[in-house]
Length: 204
Image (tube, rainbow, N blue to C red; front, side, top):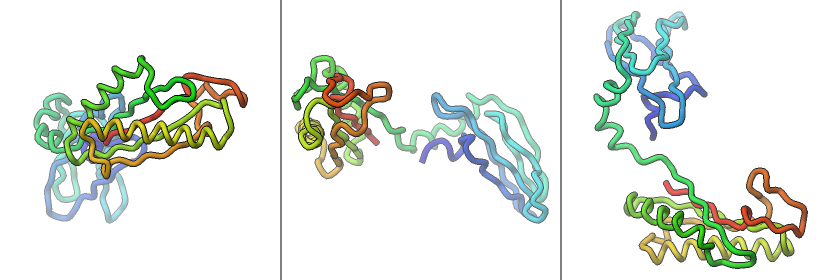
């Protein structure tokens, strides 16, 4: 669950149906970092007509019977009132990329800071962490060799994390060979590309 439960994504329109006598309040909070705020439609279930549309962060709608009244508010203050809810929500997923020398399952020196950030993130999430590891290669070598190399890189990353305390059962790894190059780095067969010699790790 994310704060989309209250600060809703613009890709869909959540609907709050008014009822005969119950009253309630709904507040539209700010979007998650880097994402715009969504909207909530308050709808009369009998006619299907929109009663109110809440589309400004911080705004509350008091729904009473077949009517709803809007009350503008400060988005930051509205978020502060729901701080306990956000603290109970899981952290959003984070993505890390580790790179490798050609033909190797050892990390490049440039990946060491990213490696430490990855370890810190896993430790911060505790025993319920979920880690997905995906290995890749460039297009030097045969398809079969690159499939094997990418899987070996993913396994090496998993083993490295296990050595830092990750429970192996909380992780999954797969090798994708040369089939999923980084955007803008699709090369001809036989052409090396350091950006594609990588492991992508998503931590949830």
